[in-house]
Structures are given as structure tokens and as C-alpha cells.
Image 1 (cartoon, rainbow, N blue to C red):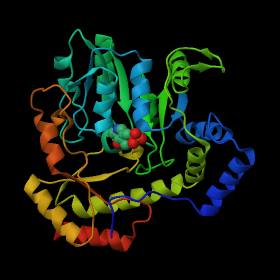
Image 2: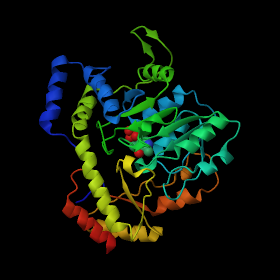
Image 3: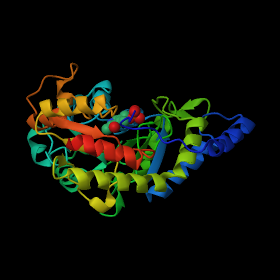
Image 4: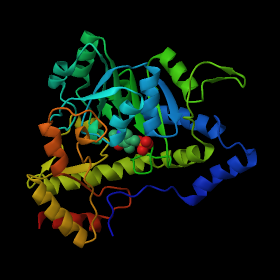
Amino acid sequence: MIPVTQPFLPPKSELYALLDEVYERNWLTNSGPLVNLLESEIPEFLNYNGHFSYVNNGTIALQIAIKALELKGEIITTPFSYVATTSSIAWEGCKAVFVDIEKGSCNIDPKKIEAAITPQTSAILATHVYGNPCDVEAIAAIAKKHNLKVIYDAAHCFGTTYKGKSIFEYGDVSTTSFHATKLFHTVEGGALFTNNKDLAHKINYMRNFGHNGQEDFWGIGINGKNSEFHAAMGIANLKHISTILRKRKAQWLLYRDQLCNHFNVLKLIDEPGFNYAYFPVFFDAEEELLKKKKLLEENHIYCRRYFYPSLNTLKYVDEQKKFDVSEVRSKVVLILPLYDKLSKKDQLLIIKKMLE
Ligand SMILES: *Cc1c(COP(=O)(O)O)cnc(C)c1O
């Protein structure tokens, strides 16, 4: 069986050495030494110079970002993302106002943002889809002109750079996910990135119930902390991440080389900075996708429709107009298997079946 992804697992001995330390200290969570170590190692690896806050998942990172920026009213967002992008907005009591995407990158189309701005708009929350950056310059210019905050859901972006800078440098806050299915993971986990010191301060209180010492509370908070066990997995994985990234790059380039004459593939915004997080293939029609998906499954190859469905079709969002690009893209996109342990032989089989 070839799954669409498989989490990387470090050698047991490396993880267990860290867990032995945890057992000895008997300090399991609440800003323990491994969490602190991971919080220094990740920004260093990413060459990220701002403030980094490790939390327990990428969804809570989005919710804390919305809360910390005190967003109200309407948030402009993309219908082409994982459900957590939209659900976080709704969960925080704001209204998701969708703006359609660009066909080539599947990222929010900045040319369509201004038409969606109203006096109630407080922010733009956009996703860097598949690890490929949004048009961050255009979005920054619109945000500045209309005095809006910008959050990037950068859940796919571990290791992505744009114009030589970590993609997490962009926006008022960037969030990411370290879920087991992501390129770098801590089993469950996530993070917030910001260059604003006061905001980082607020985020760090918010992720720990607002605690200011044992008996005082700085303000409202939630439990966004992560544990020593999760940090141990992250620290162990981080030792292998350069190799993982290198392998994925080779796999991604082989797919593109073999498939780009037969299918539409992702248009890279900044190829040298790409992290090779996903290899999406765009079919001409949904029927073709379904036929191919079935053929692949008959050969025990499991691909994923991602993102599907377009989020403007969720039952709990206010009905809005049609979003032609997002709705069509979500129906014709299929993600091919890409992970550390995918063998060359299996990848060649996938390519063969794709071309059949
Ligand atoms: C994975 C993902 C999330 C959610 O992250 P979790 O860590 O699973 O909560 C949010 N947005 C996008 C785009 C994602 O891919």
C-alpha cells in the first residue's frame, strides 16, 4: 500500500534518550527544558529572527492569533484551505468573508481583495497553499492602505523562504502546524511567529491561561501549551530535517519532470525557496480525477483530494456568492504521495499509473 503521506519517525534510540531525561526530571509539561530547547532550535534552523511561540496545534495558533490581534467583525480569507482556517474565524466569533483564489498558485487573489473590504473588515487571513507563498507584497500594500491586520496560515510552510527570508517573517502573525502529517512534526503541535514584541508577549500569556505567576492573571488565556513528549519528538526530528527536505526535493522534481507535459502542476512562486511540501496535480475535469483516483486505488496507491471541498460551501458559514476558481480547483486537484520513505520504485509505479 502506498499512502499519500507517512509521518517521519526518528530512530528510537534518539527519541528514547530524550525521553529518559524527561523521566529523570519528571517534568512533563508547562514550559519544560525540552520545550524551551525546541523553541530555540526551530527559529535557528529556519533562520527566523522574530518571536516564536510553540503551542499544542496549528488550529489553536490561528485562534490565539485572532484573539491576540483583537479582531472583530469580518475577516477576509481564502476558500481554498484546510477547514481550520475558516473554523478558527467562526470560533472566535468573526465572520469569514471569502475572496477567490488565483488559478496557478491556488492562493488568495489580491486583485479581488479590495472589493470585499467593508467598514467591518478587521483583517486578512490567507493561506500559503502547498508551501507556496501568497503575493505577500500586494497583500501588505492593501492591508496598509485599509489599516487591516494580516495573518498567514503557514501550516504548509516549514522551511519555505521568500526572496531569501523565512516566509514566517511576513504578516502581523504567521502560524504553522507541526501535526504528524506535516513535513516537520512534533506529533501534534503548532507555532506562532511575530516580529512585534508586545504581541509576542501577549501571545505567550494567552497560550498559558493568562498566568502571571501562580496567583495572578495578566488577562484572558487558553491552554495552548505543548508537552515535553511532543518537544522530544520535535527535537529528534529536527536532526533529520535537512535530509528529509533534500529527499522530498528530489521526489518532487521527478514528479514534475515526468508529469508536467501531461497534467497541470503547481506554479512555484519562488522556486529556490520552496519546501516541496506537496505535489498537487490538476485535472481538466472532476470526472477524470475520479477515474484516475479509482485506478490508483485499484493499484493500492492512495492519493488525497486536498483541499476539498471549497470552504465557502461549509454549512456554518454565511452563504456568499460563488467562487468559481476555488470551487473548480478543489474539484480537480489530487495530491500525490510524497514522504521520506517513499521508494523510487513506488514513485515510478505511481508515475506509470498516472500516465496510463
Ligand atoms: C494542518 C493545517 C491546519 C491545522 O493544523 P493542526 O495542527 O492540525 O491544528 C491549519 N491550516 C492548514 C492550511 C493546515 O494544513
